[in-house]
Image 1 (cartoon, rainbow, N blue to C red):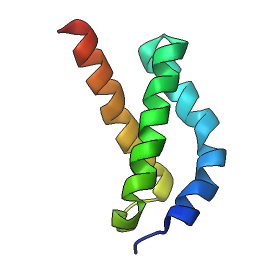
Image 2: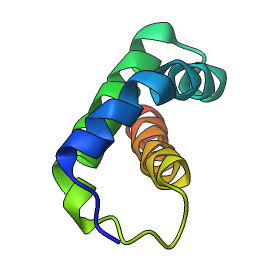
Image 3: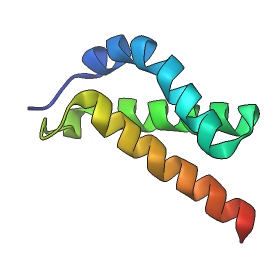
Length: 78
């Protein structure tokens, strides 16, 4: 079931602290973590209409964050 951008924005406020905590744990850099979360929230907002509901919305957003973190780590190491 697609969700609107309004639905996504309402949930971002609740998700953001946990997203930042996860990103800081993985990246061990507060600035890089904030960047990854910001990119994640922007992507999730832009793609919120494509969310199909096959998982929880939170799981979907954390999945986006996981790949943003991997992108940053790959850029750092290569």
